[in-house]
Image 1 (tube, helix red, strand yellow):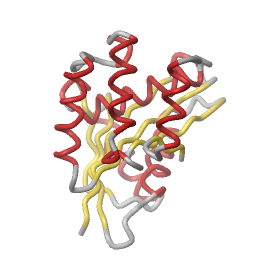
Image 2 (cartoon, helix red, strand yellow):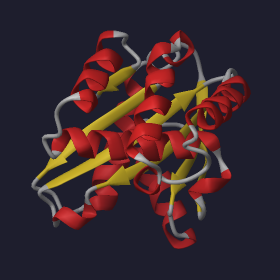
Image 3 (cartoon, rainbow, N blue to C red):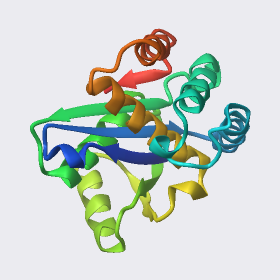
Image 4 (cartoon, rainbow, N blue to C red):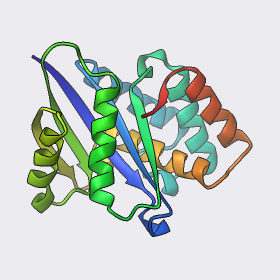
Length: 189
């Protein structure tokens, strides 16, 4: 049975429902390789192990430029933008489901899902709701510190990046967005 490793972050609760972005990184058995690559790119770009908003503008762009130039990330970075929604958990669960269903394995699979900041009390609910939506879950786990895993940091970067796009930023951010979409690395679900 194939295992999918799913790393999730979100952005937009501060907009009070105006825009809410769910970012999902989906990997298979290449997970360890992608973890190493992300860590290398974090070092090369000087983004390091910090959240999107805490790193410099230059480092953020350089980091995602490396990611969007690497074919090993093709189809792995998925996001969904919700508008006029305040049911953040429901939106997050739907975003996870849509991201997994976008290109799920044709044979049997199970998922190990890691959600940034997910409280222990919500793990069971997320798992039950995902199973109801047809996603076989082996484990749903919260990650208390996104600094602890490079793929959670990547999900954070994509969520922050997509928030910048949703907020109307142009210039290099917009060029980078087009590059990620054209390379089929950044996928809207």
